[in-house]
Length: 130
Image (cartoon, rainbow, N blue to C red; front, side):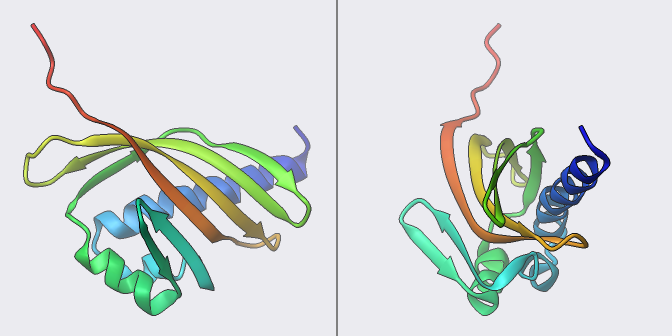
């Protein structure tokens, strides 16, 4: 891995971490600004576009904790395609879910931001059997 690759990986990792930290802390504006002004979030059949709509999405999201996995990063011209997995544990004690993110990200060398994020729920978390 080159120094440039390591720096890019760090910027992307920071973006993914900030996504979880800001939404979990209920910091809707900071969370929305992780996307480009016309950034898109797709979750199920819902498509949310732009900072104002993203702030509303974040405000309506259930409180809890997002835990993300390490990303894979592939260059696609001037954009990056990033894949990662997550577990979400709701604060109200209801069963959590696991899923995946597929992202299109731009990285200007100083900051990475989302162009498009697709969230797919893979399975609800299951209680331990014993």
